[in-house]
Image 1 (tube, one colour):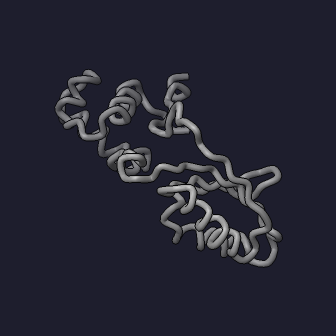
Image 2 (cartoon, helix red, strand yellow):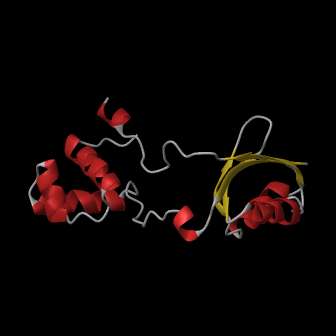
Length: 158
């Protein structure tokens, strides 16, 4: 775990709320002058702690009305199926995130599509037809209560 001081933790918290904040404002907010703040900011980027910046886009605002989590189980782990599956998922625009899992299923996909018809097309005609896919379990998101929007940082203060 990286050793970050209170200034760096405050910087990360502030940037998670507003990643476009100028360094001069960031410095004032965390209690540093601009030059040391800029050096710490650069150091956090070089260390890979700050990976980049991106716009947060409303999925509904761009017409993606259906959000689901899909658990996928493969038939085998020894025939190259996991690697082929991961490569295929990388090319699927509908999949915003993919995780490997322990337990009954091998992968968890986060998928967003415009409609239930599009979801059916995705699951039945694309996902289920991938080599090595044994079964899928789809869960429809009714409401997003929290996140994903930030990384918790409280453990860094311990």
